[in-house]
Image 1 (tube, rainbow, N blue to C red):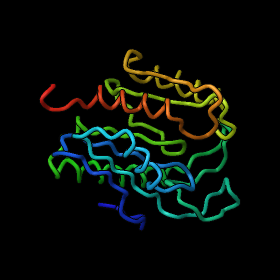
Image 2 (image 1 turned 45 degrees about the vertical axis):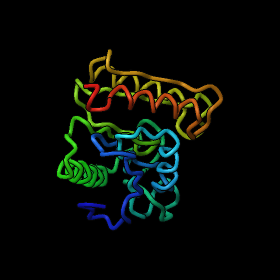
Image 3 (image 1 turned 60 degrees about the vertical axis):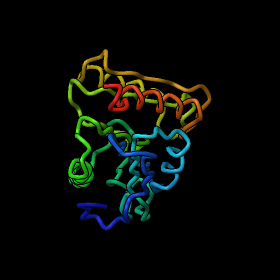
Image 4 (image 1 turned 90 degrees about the vertical axis):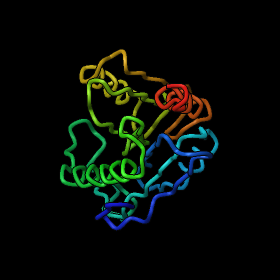
Length: 198
């Protein structure tokens, strides 16, 4: 990974079918890799968009009895009052910024880059003008649906609420579904139209 100081392998990349004028950087969840998400984005590919799916470094995770697994930062617990690995989150943010900076050097303006993620990686940079799509399955046993709703309410207080969309998916556990991937594609198409359409 460009600028990566956390010793993770190079990202899985789905190149644009034509000249890339936009990019999506999408981070996987705890214990996963970027490969599965790269495959998912291949299925909803937009011709002018490059998809970058980095891999988290392997580290011990407190939540999982300190077992080593791909993780962007340590997770101490799933309850709302669990502490946070502030230094790990900062390191992960710096590495994500390095990926964004590399794409800017490659000629993609920063306003044409979307940052997204699943589960552990779903935190977005907070800017009141940013557009956010949050998706959550209502049968998620790992991150209860109520936590998703609470996050949605918090985000609406931090950004322009008209730029925020929360979508729920009936019967979907801690995973993505085809309907969700179509919604993600539509969000990307709206936020990153072809240059000729701007």
